[in-house]
Picture (tube, rainbow, N blue to C red):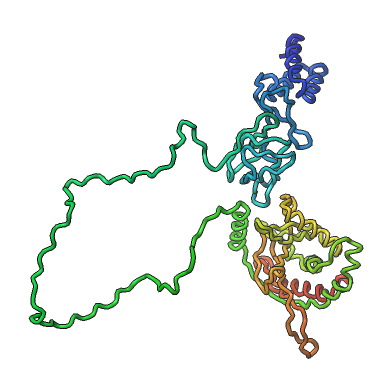
Length: 472
């Protein structure tokens, strides 16, 4: 191996020249290895080139490369069939597999970066895009199949004739094309062993009796009505009644599993309180125009509760802690997960280091996460972690509910609808905009005193935002 001669090098360069349109990067590496490094490194480089398909002589093999995490293809004068094999996009470290769903079919023409399908993981969906314009030639996995990292997904034809587009019905050969439609005779049953008479036998003669001589017998008792399962026609449902089954998505399966694990693991208890939204509503109404003008985002109610929760979590560190085996892990940072409902399920993007944010920072973070969630662009990293969760069921009109803890956190705050209700204020009954709050917590770690104190601190901060400025 140490005596790689000029003849071998000439042969290698001869083959490389045959593929000069493809060897922009590889030939440079080969030259650098061939003339500046040892013969063993040269042989290793040649092995890599052979693995890429250059020394193997297989002109039909698709060669792939990566540049800025994108595939590149060889020129059309290299292969008679110019294809790209597209693999699974990069997964996060915590994700090993997903379910693929195709939006295109074989024969469809796609543009560069057009979404061909998506891979649905436990936490989010990863789009699969076409690296170049072309026509889908073949799928290597079916819709709904599981795929892993680095697995081949589909073949993209860059040039040449496109394969025919798949249809729902399979085409049959011309030789087997059916004749014009005609009535198919029904299959007659096999003949029985005995002969069936063609005419019915004559009925037996009934002896006649004069009407006057017929004597009435004893009355026959009426038989009781038999029970029936049939419903009266007037209460039967109108129209067609049908049902169908749909496969649970991987995200829905994961949500169901996590919620059941939370119910089975935690000693969950919920405490309630109500908050007067008068002052925060007045503050929002008074400063909303100036807030938008300066910061470019609207001032909502969610930022007030996130800021109040961060203040309360620093005051009650146990609520911000978590149990790991036989230890309690206290966090000196506050990362709040905000539940966002999407058509595919509930996602919880995380706003990190909330204790260092002001109202404008929080509103910008909420808007950015909301846009990414609605566009299905949330990454795994956007939802990892979190020390506390806030769920706002009030946007759907919920009056009160008991949220379930988001593992591995220890508590979750549930916000509800703002409703005008009569309340006692200084001995008088007034109509105020009120909201019910629900705090579900892990009673293994958090005592009732800590939970109630924590929720009352949120109530006080929302009802009087000046307490946050004074750190009260």
